[in-house]
Image (cartoon, rainbow, N blue to C red):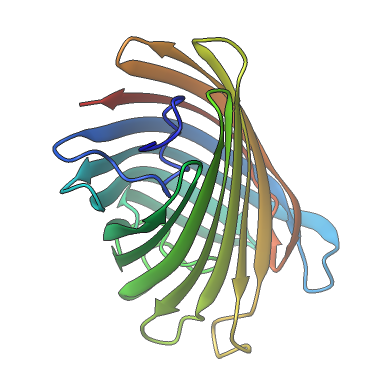
Length: 251
């Protein structure tokens, strides 16, 4: 089979798009924080963080094995911490990449993806002033498994190299989806990031772990998805809480 019948969302990227077909997802997100995790993983007051974002994610099947991926996001972000105020309005880091299916069985698929990240005026690097950051490259392996017509699970393991003084990162994302009915689907996801280098001047090591739950409904070739996320754990990272709505359309 070419992929699970339930057509997993962009987060389940192990499955390739069919040749000449694609997916576009428009997401509006409201993200807030007024606490952070310190170096000892203790939760403490930390001023405030406000982010309003509209992002577009695109996948396009170049052939049966290769899929082009891209993401661009417009942000309005504000941060007050230790009497220091930072604000930006504009693009965050944009991404363009290439994913290749390496192997596919009846229910299992293995893929690899390389992407380049281009810095913008907004968030580019965790814990840094808006607009900070240089070019970055992301290499990841993806494995996905479908469970008949009702469910799927997927894992992504990535290494992100950053130019300049910024710390490289390891990332691990998990997604599980289950179709409640023919049109309704529930998704549970986790997103983890760890810096993999020691502290540098102006760049402290960190990690952050997010949990996300959402529900989606198919409307013909379109799907509407709503959900939220929390940050239950971290180190030198803010405790973010977010709500989002996505509209994704296959073409």
